[in-house]
Image (cartoon, rainbow, N blue to C red; front, top):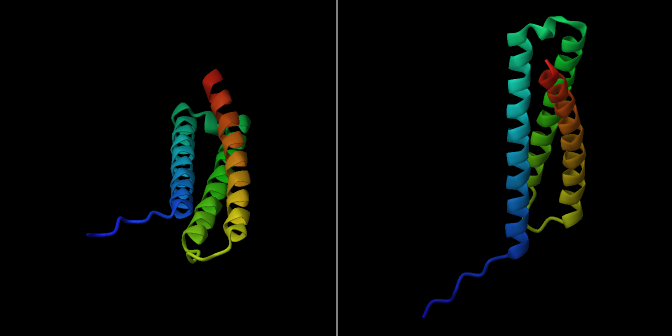
Amino acid sequence: MTSPDVVDLAQARDARRLRDFQARCHGVDEVNRKSLARLFQTGFIFTRQGARLARDLLLAHQHLLRVGDLLARIAELPEGADASDSAVLYDEAQSLLARTTELTARCGVVLAQR
């Protein structure tokens, strides 16, 4: 008789949380790329407000790069690592994603009005 596989639920939760963060980053990145493309296509980027929005999108992209780095560090943590180590990294990633979402939403509102 074979013994059933044991699943570590904490490890499964951590893996899912990491995948969810990565998916959110990818989604925000896609929205930012589309917004930047729309700024160029409409010529709005050559206005003062459009240039400001493009700078916001660049800042959002920099935040996403930082989040990607944080997620890579989380993925590289050893199995027995203290939960507070990953919690600090997740908190920083969450705050950067929130800021990025705010910047992206601001751009989306202006582009929707055009």
